[in-house]
Image (cartoon, rainbow, N blue to C red):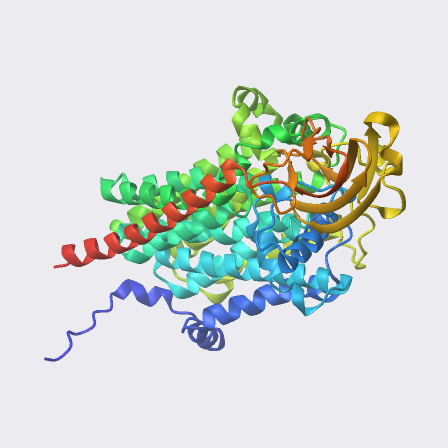
Length: 582
């Protein structure tokens, strides 16, 4: 049987590119896998300064992520494949950072750690991981925007727009070095791509939605608070006009599965914030009102204001074009117009919420303040910018190569202006200290340091009968969440370990798993107290341990359940498509 004739509508002739050289280039790039290869080289080129010279010394978060990565990776490759309690941070007193902070970005960078233990490689492996995040995000944006436009060239330009967005490239990458947030932006487009595929009844739609939402949750919590609701609104825009309730149902099922997969992290992040100083994140200097646009404040936020205003203006202009573009009405154009209207409305709302005039709304929504900075709404604005660029290009009739690259030229000009305003400086600084950020510093590290002379990790405290100072004390094992020491004392003796108590440590005689021997008892009280234990007279080997908490065990179980449900949902989506096929 001969193949049916290919019908080419007259309107598609308008898409032809006038300049033959550019036409050959863009046509070639549209062939797989060349778009992905091009996006890789674009990501590589944009991150080349960081790959050569390391993380910017001027980056707001550079020092924190360098410290976290250094100690996280060492602990992961030493004895702890999934570090939660970072033993050597906070000047050696231990940090609970990864009970609360999403672990995926630092896990990715830590995979490169065995190549070298030097400071230069520490910088470069984080730079490699940032480059990878940039590339993953570009591929995700290409996958999503290709579903929107059904044109590879247009989707390719949209993916470049996503990568070059001022908030993405300048603010998050070079100005702040917001490593975790960059990984959040890497996963988010996959969720939006998945939602489009759900409307086509494809198994890949469920898989990509789960990948995008779970990756976002495991990478950066504030971004997830913004982008997961944004994705659900987007699902409604796709499904409600056609009354595709099944699409909404599958989107909800995929999102729920993703939340369960992230249970390994969420179980502790949501229940153990009471043990850290969360007020450090939201009060004083970090009060949300200080960071609103046009608000008088003691902090310098001009870069964030510039990025927000310029990015919003460009998004508004690009998204307005499809609303007045001529052309016949069909389902595709109706969807594009609907998305263009939503993009314009979303841009206006996001911009308003970043100004001082929105302060009463933020006050009424304390949970929303968990995003910490109002300008972080630019994560959603970045997605809208990419979407508006492809809608703009689809509305152009006739197309030309110079109009195709117009959004890219505009972004290049904006980024040049931003970098001139706040240039990045490099220098590969070493780890100047092992301090922890204030919210994860549980107690007085400076005052307690005097108790441990000469770099010791154990110290003797007061003991009944005054004989404690003459006791002998030997450290036998010092591992994350597990310490073993030998003591020989004539009187009950207090022993201090150079670790904060956090959720609570336990003690027992080494080799006594049931803990039946009454050789020790814990004296520690709060999470900021040192690990303190009183040992009975005599010679003992004592084991101190931070046992796995109920939340950790529950989180592991929930993640397993989430993976099972995700596999079941993907399988069911495939069966649904086969059974509904004509």
